[in-house]
Amino acid sequence: MAEHDVFLADCPARTTLDLIADTWSVVVVFGLGRGPLRYSDLHDRIGGISNKMLTQTLRKLERNNLVERRTPPNAPAGVEYRLTFLGESLLGPVSVLAQWAQEHATDLGGDD
Image (cartoon, rainbow, N blue to C red; front, top):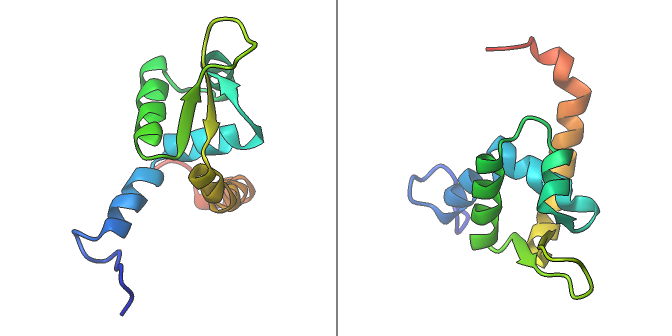
């Protein structure tokens, strides 16, 4: 059996899935896939996300080394968010998931 087993309640791999499997984490990672964005630009890009939820999601991803917050050297006051190397490694799987969702959105039968 593998070192990590997502079927075990206390498995670190399950904790990792919990972190990245929520809608907003996936959308934020996908949104930062083309490069760094300021908070307001990221918020504008992601329809339907509240300021509170975007802030919480960015902080969670930052705490887990998927996103970094930095002040650009030659920019007006403010910060930008970018994927870390680890976050960039997640972009491939997230992009595949997002593409699948876009292709099959109408096939899933609508709301619960």
